[in-house]
Length: 357
Ligand code: NAD
Ligand code: DAU
Image: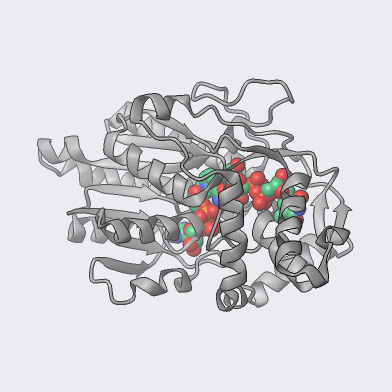
């Protein structure tokens, strides 16, 4: 069995990835996570007795720690999920994004390179550094523009997107200059279990259930492409397995939707579950927009389909229903992550920004 060093594996996508990898017996996992406000050990509860999952509390920017883990575990691959991931937080405080997404990713690359240079020729050929990135690096599309393909120009618009773009460039440079066998994936918006309630879908579910306002930024006509998180994890495994070093792969759900439609769908699903509280859509409130808000993202995922045979398996209708049920059925998890830090964030991003809720 392979060994993977997964970073950020206590966060939303990382935890889903680690849980799937262990469920499928795909690899032994060493999981390095700093447990920032976004990292939740609860996500990994089901792996408590799994001897092939080792959790390490630490920073991807801690070079001696990374060197020790690489020497000790000699992983076949590094999969880098660790990041500051929330656009609104990057607007109110970009520094942490520069630190983890750029400086941290660079430290991880430097550690990986040193380790890789000491491997045998065969082990060097087999090794992979997979960097998980985002479609936000490409900037914003007009309503009739073609979807982002891998050669779309980088035009990041938020501090978050700019920090991810910088990291993508460093990953590219480490291949081009030193030969490190890197892979980069640029994915659209994920949704599903274990997503932090600062993000649109879990926030709306949580607020609607509590009878609180549903804060839609601006006119709510901004478009995102939505992918069920397990499909993203499958795609990453396909890239690890069959992707060509130095290549980048766009990953998307073929499910472009305006935000307001997402919120209305959630309200309809909740009306079905709690008819006495219907219509939940009465809670929708249009609030002041996100500064620099990208209008539309869309992914052209033809390359990964053509070259690696991956395409999404879960339709948006299936995925969103599963997601609503998961949040309703996992109240203890929702309560655990709705901690004082999260309440401070709600105060800072909604009340102090004059969004009035
Ligand atoms: P998340 O915020 O839920 O989780 C991030 C995890 O990284 C947390 O567990 C956190 O503790 C950990 N972390 C943060 N700084 C760290 C550091 N310095 N060292 C070690 N661990 C650290 O994020 P997510 O939504 O799961 O996103 C994971 C990755 O996927 C990110 O790189 C993000 O840019 C990318 N991505 C996310 C989406 C999405 O829709 N959520 C879409 C495309 C790409
Ligand atoms: O596109 C991929 C990106 O998707 C990832 O790289 C990011 O890590 C991830 O957070 C996500 O970014 P978004 O900014 O698109 O996700 P978020 O859930 O924050 O917002 C989705 C849309 O909903 C966006 O247009 C802003 C809007 N929104 C969000 C919040 C939190 C609202 O209208 N109201 C809100 O309260």
